[in-house]
Length: 236
Image (cartoon, rainbow, N blue to C red; front, top):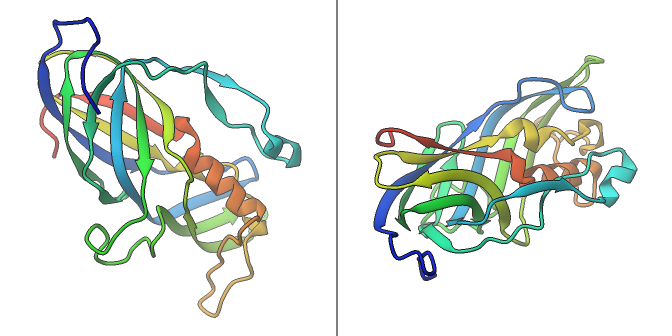
């Protein structure tokens, strides 16, 4: 990728750290399940920053016909000029937080970013936390009826998560970008009653094609699940 701002010759080279963390669900999901995550990992291949701003719209989604909620999509989104990138693959423990690396970037008016997930390797996931998948979450879901499901689920996306909102006029000020993954959005469309029967250890999975798996995929690919902010000061 060639970084630049077209004819905006005033752009200057700069770098900044990009970190990733998570926020836990704060309320029951739309099916009445309260989720307590016990583990959550993401295999990030790259983060790319663009000038284009995101206008969110809600468009037709077949999933809404079977009791779900349609995703928020970038409406008429055009990425525009590329302003920065982090290209070092990392497996991130979302509950602990992690540093994705330094963005090679330029100054300018930032509007959005693109997040690409990749299949982890032994080098990026030495402990095999993801089991060869791009996203993993494990925890307990408790329904308002009193039912409880212990679950362990994975996701692989076929394409990048495009059009994540990040609006800032970024010059030479000190600071870093923080991407907070909203696990509540990941979990919000899942009816845990559609998970598999528990195994010998009492843990359920999300079978391919099940409502639970489809709901998780839509949560992970929802751009609103990634809250991006500029934080003054060095990354911890």
